[in-house]
Length: 200
Image (cartoon, rainbow, N blue to C red; front, side):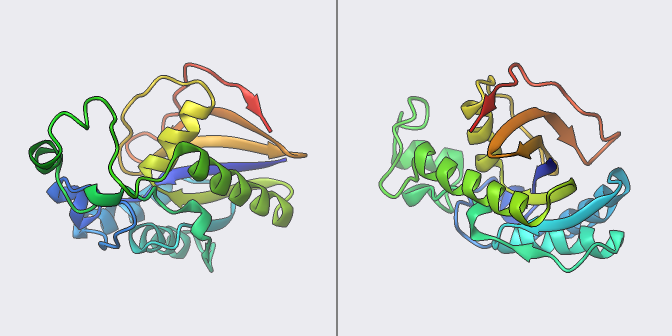
Protein backbone atom coordinates (compact mmCIF):
# COMPACT_ATOMS: atom_id res chain seq x y z
CA UNK A 1 0.00 0.00 0.00
CA UNK A 2 1.32 3.44 -0.93
CA UNK A 3 0.09 6.74 0.50
CA UNK A 4 -0.10 9.65 -1.93
CA UNK A 5 0.03 13.12 -0.38
CA UNK A 6 -1.51 15.09 -3.25
CA UNK A 7 -1.06 18.83 -2.65
CA UNK A 8 -1.66 22.03 -4.53
CA UNK A 9 1.46 23.94 -5.60
CA UNK A 10 2.69 26.98 -3.68
CA UNK A 11 1.57 30.49 -4.62
CA UNK A 12 2.22 31.49 -8.24
CA UNK A 13 2.37 34.98 -9.70
CA UNK A 14 -1.05 34.37 -11.31
CA UNK A 15 -2.49 33.32 -7.94
CA UNK A 16 -1.50 36.78 -6.73
CA UNK A 17 -3.35 38.33 -9.69
CA UNK A 18 -6.40 36.06 -9.24
CA UNK A 19 -6.07 34.62 -12.76
CA UNK A 20 -7.37 31.22 -13.87
CA UNK A 21 -4.23 29.30 -14.76
CA UNK A 22 -5.26 26.04 -16.38
CA UNK A 23 -2.42 24.80 -18.60
CA UNK A 24 -0.63 28.16 -18.58
CA UNK A 25 2.82 28.15 -17.04
CA UNK A 26 3.34 31.08 -14.65
CA UNK A 27 6.18 30.65 -12.13
CA UNK A 28 6.02 30.73 -8.35
CA UNK A 29 5.94 34.10 -6.64
CA UNK A 30 8.71 34.97 -4.18
CA UNK A 31 6.26 34.23 -1.36
CA UNK A 32 5.40 30.91 -3.02
CA UNK A 33 9.02 29.79 -3.01
CA UNK A 34 9.19 30.59 0.71
CA UNK A 35 5.94 28.64 1.28
CA UNK A 36 7.46 25.60 -0.39
CA UNK A 37 10.56 25.74 1.80
CA UNK A 38 8.41 26.04 4.94
CA UNK A 39 6.14 23.17 3.84
CA UNK A 40 8.98 20.67 4.04
CA UNK A 41 8.97 20.96 7.85
CA UNK A 42 5.51 19.33 7.89
CA UNK A 43 6.66 16.24 6.00
CA UNK A 44 8.19 13.10 7.49
CA UNK A 45 9.54 9.99 5.77
CA UNK A 46 8.59 10.92 2.21
CA UNK A 47 9.90 8.21 -0.11
CA UNK A 48 9.97 10.41 -3.20
CA UNK A 49 8.42 13.49 -4.82
CA UNK A 50 6.31 13.46 -7.99
CA UNK A 51 5.02 16.57 -9.72
CA UNK A 52 2.88 17.90 -12.51
CA UNK A 53 5.11 19.07 -15.35
CA UNK A 54 3.79 22.65 -15.12
CA UNK A 55 6.40 25.05 -13.72
CA UNK A 56 4.50 26.20 -10.61
CA UNK A 57 4.11 22.60 -9.43
CA UNK A 58 7.56 21.44 -10.53
CA UNK A 59 9.27 24.39 -8.81
CA UNK A 60 7.32 23.69 -5.60
CA UNK A 61 8.29 20.02 -5.73
CA UNK A 62 11.95 20.76 -6.41
CA UNK A 63 12.21 23.19 -3.48
CA UNK A 64 10.57 20.69 -1.11
CA UNK A 65 12.66 17.78 -2.40
CA UNK A 66 15.88 19.75 -2.05
CA UNK A 67 14.97 20.81 1.49
CA UNK A 68 14.17 17.21 2.45
CA UNK A 69 17.02 15.62 0.51
CA UNK A 70 14.41 13.57 -1.33
CA UNK A 71 15.27 14.33 -4.96
CA UNK A 72 15.27 14.04 -7.85
CA UNK A 73 11.68 15.00 -8.64
CA UNK A 74 9.78 12.85 -11.15
CA UNK A 75 7.41 14.83 -13.40
CA UNK A 76 4.24 13.28 -14.80
CA UNK A 77 1.84 15.23 -17.07
CA UNK A 78 -1.00 13.10 -15.68
CA UNK A 79 -1.01 15.44 -12.67
CA UNK A 80 -1.44 18.63 -14.76
CA UNK A 81 -4.15 21.16 -14.01
CA UNK A 82 -7.43 20.98 -15.92
CA UNK A 83 -7.51 22.74 -19.27
CA UNK A 84 -9.87 25.69 -18.67
CA UNK A 85 -10.11 26.66 -22.33
CA UNK A 86 -11.01 30.27 -23.08
CA UNK A 87 -10.99 31.21 -19.40
CA UNK A 88 -7.24 30.70 -19.11
CA UNK A 89 -5.50 33.88 -18.01
CA UNK A 90 -8.71 35.67 -17.02
CA UNK A 91 -9.78 36.79 -13.56
CA UNK A 92 -13.24 35.83 -12.30
CA UNK A 93 -14.34 39.43 -12.91
CA UNK A 94 -13.17 39.23 -16.54
CA UNK A 95 -14.95 35.89 -16.99
CA UNK A 96 -18.19 37.45 -15.72
CA UNK A 97 -17.68 40.39 -18.10
CA UNK A 98 -16.96 38.24 -21.16
CA UNK A 99 -19.16 35.24 -20.29
CA UNK A 100 -21.94 36.76 -18.16
CA UNK A 101 -23.60 34.25 -15.85
CA UNK A 102 -21.66 31.23 -17.15
CA UNK A 103 -19.41 30.82 -14.12
CA UNK A 104 -22.31 30.73 -11.65
CA UNK A 105 -24.14 27.97 -13.56
CA UNK A 106 -20.97 26.08 -14.56
CA UNK A 107 -21.50 26.66 -18.26
CA UNK A 108 -17.89 26.03 -19.19
CA UNK A 109 -16.18 27.44 -22.31
CA UNK A 110 -14.80 25.64 -25.36
CA UNK A 111 -11.62 23.76 -24.50
CA UNK A 112 -12.71 22.95 -20.93
CA UNK A 113 -11.50 19.50 -19.87
CA UNK A 114 -14.26 17.26 -18.53
CA UNK A 115 -14.18 15.63 -15.11
CA UNK A 116 -14.14 12.23 -16.82
CA UNK A 117 -10.99 13.07 -18.80
CA UNK A 118 -9.22 14.55 -15.80
CA UNK A 119 -10.09 11.61 -13.54
CA UNK A 120 -8.93 9.06 -16.09
CA UNK A 121 -5.46 10.59 -16.36
CA UNK A 122 -5.08 11.31 -12.63
CA UNK A 123 -6.14 7.81 -11.55
CA UNK A 124 -3.79 6.36 -14.16
CA UNK A 125 -0.99 8.53 -12.76
CA UNK A 126 -1.83 7.27 -9.24
CA UNK A 127 -1.51 3.67 -10.38
CA UNK A 128 1.82 4.41 -12.10
CA UNK A 129 3.20 5.59 -8.77
CA UNK A 130 1.83 2.51 -6.99
CA UNK A 131 3.63 0.25 -9.47
CA UNK A 132 6.97 1.95 -8.73
CA UNK A 133 6.45 2.42 -4.98
CA UNK A 134 4.55 -0.34 -3.21
CA UNK A 135 4.74 1.21 0.28
CA UNK A 136 5.48 4.43 2.13
CA UNK A 137 4.51 8.05 1.49
CA UNK A 138 4.91 9.77 -1.88
CA UNK A 139 4.42 13.52 -2.16
CA UNK A 140 2.59 14.57 -5.34
CA UNK A 141 2.54 18.28 -6.18
CA UNK A 142 -0.44 19.03 -8.39
CA UNK A 143 -3.23 21.62 -8.73
CA UNK A 144 -6.48 22.76 -7.14
CA UNK A 145 -8.65 21.58 -10.04
CA UNK A 146 -7.22 18.07 -9.71
CA UNK A 147 -7.92 18.00 -5.96
CA UNK A 148 -11.48 19.33 -6.31
CA UNK A 149 -12.27 16.77 -9.01
CA UNK A 150 -10.90 13.91 -6.90
CA UNK A 151 -13.04 15.06 -3.97
CA UNK A 152 -16.19 15.15 -6.14
CA UNK A 153 -15.33 11.63 -7.29
CA UNK A 154 -15.31 10.51 -3.66
CA UNK A 155 -18.57 12.29 -2.82
CA UNK A 156 -17.12 15.20 -0.83
CA UNK A 157 -18.76 18.59 -0.61
CA UNK A 158 -16.86 21.48 -2.16
CA UNK A 159 -14.57 23.40 0.17
CA UNK A 160 -11.95 25.79 -1.13
CA UNK A 161 -8.35 24.69 -0.70
CA UNK A 162 -5.32 26.90 -0.27
CA UNK A 163 -1.83 26.61 -1.67
CA UNK A 164 -0.05 23.53 -0.26
CA UNK A 165 -3.32 22.04 0.96
CA UNK A 166 -4.32 18.65 -0.38
CA UNK A 167 -5.43 15.08 0.13
CA UNK A 168 -4.06 11.85 1.54
CA UNK A 169 -4.94 8.94 -0.77
CA UNK A 170 -4.19 5.24 -0.36
CA UNK A 171 -3.55 3.10 -3.43
CA UNK A 172 -3.46 -0.66 -3.04
CA UNK A 173 -4.13 -3.53 -5.47
CA UNK A 174 -5.96 -1.28 -7.92
CA UNK A 175 -8.13 0.37 -5.25
CA UNK A 176 -7.92 4.10 -4.51
CA UNK A 177 -9.24 5.33 -1.18
CA UNK A 178 -9.49 8.91 0.07
CA UNK A 179 -8.23 9.28 3.64
CA UNK A 180 -8.73 12.99 4.26
CA UNK A 181 -7.41 16.48 3.70
CA UNK A 182 -3.94 17.59 4.70
CA UNK A 183 -2.20 20.95 4.89
CA UNK A 184 1.54 21.55 4.60
CA UNK A 185 1.24 25.10 5.89
CA UNK A 186 0.43 26.31 9.39
CA UNK A 187 0.26 23.40 11.82
CA UNK A 188 -0.05 20.75 9.09
CA UNK A 189 -3.39 19.61 10.50
CA UNK A 190 -5.26 16.82 8.72
CA UNK A 191 -8.92 17.55 8.05
CA UNK A 192 -11.53 14.84 7.56
CA UNK A 193 -13.61 15.05 4.36
CA UNK A 194 -17.37 14.67 4.28
CA UNK A 195 -17.10 11.21 2.68
CA UNK A 196 -14.44 8.52 2.31
CA UNK A 197 -15.40 6.11 -0.41
CA UNK A 198 -13.25 3.43 -1.94
CA UNK A 199 -13.07 3.57 -5.72
CA UNK A 200 -11.28 1.48 -8.31
